[in-house]
Image (cartoon, rainbow, N blue to C red; front, side, top):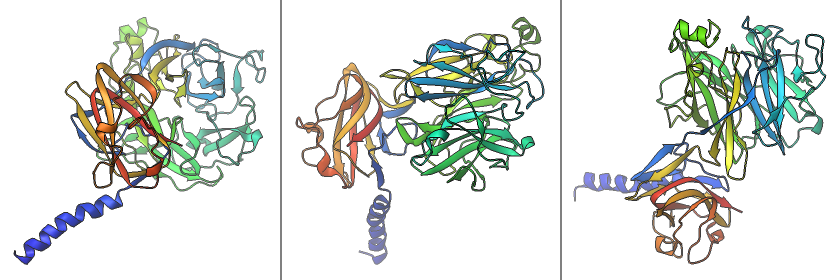
Length: 478
């Protein structure tokens, strides 16, 4: 055989093994979702499917005199058994950053029924009987965005933090609170100064990166976009880095609402507002009929979903809308349909996201949308069946858990393979108990055993056989 042919064939057979060995993932015991292809190597007759949340109706009207038509930039925080909704209160349209803007709070024990506490902290129109947690601080109350600091070294009396500000205020500031009601400035000076910040700018402690991370408004090629910075102490931040979107086109992202998913904190889920400037739906007559402010119906918006795992790359596997504007022209005005920051669990099987609707109208409110746990997206196979093969990975745990659903005729079965794709004895497809049903948590078994601890530290991959089924997540449990 010609020596060139021999060398060519050698490269063909050597290169895949070389690349294969370099791409081994370490997933430990982290839950794996399917909003991206992080763990997926091959889909055969299986598709990635985006699931849309269910409209559960309005849960909180901005009907107080100090709240009103232009209330916005909500953050939902689940703190044990208590849910907190923070939002901007503003009745009348005017110049951004005015002293009329306040930061308000509503409370709930189930995420569904909300009340507005009379805190007695700030006086409005001669009374302190209101739910205001911050006032008389221009530009800070414009976009005040709280979070619970999960840094293990965070002092108990600084457990609540917030980021807020604008370039006209000098940049973004950090605020601190012990109880989430009374707030004070954490540092006298702005901590991030490069950017217009005219949006809801977010920060959080990242368990996976072991540092604070912030995502904030910047401008890029004429589009409202996002940049990122990191910090170890909330005061000293790295220089901002623009977020990239791969080969996806730029769109106006008015908000991005990036935050760790509470069941898989290594994945940051961003349910943001996609803004469509000058895409007008309502006529002047219709806007007047619904009492929409005349400056706020020349555009429209919806909610999109994307993810990032750190670094400056967003993954937009799904370009289509995650939450479409609801029925009714009131939902097709400018700056409506803006999602709140954070997805929170609201039952054993359900999680919720909240959306600001009817902006610039007297009926402005927060609406709840529900999803199954982990149910942002799934791998879906039809009746004819299909297979999924993962990338090679190592894990830590003693059992494999899946979140799935099948039809009465459908099924899910899983084979564990070695890094070369050969079935491992005792974990072959015919050894797997056929999985039928609809469960948030199902432990996979082979030959009546769920124990996979013998494979810890070894490079494996999964081959998943599916028929008329959806797979929402998988996880190895310790």
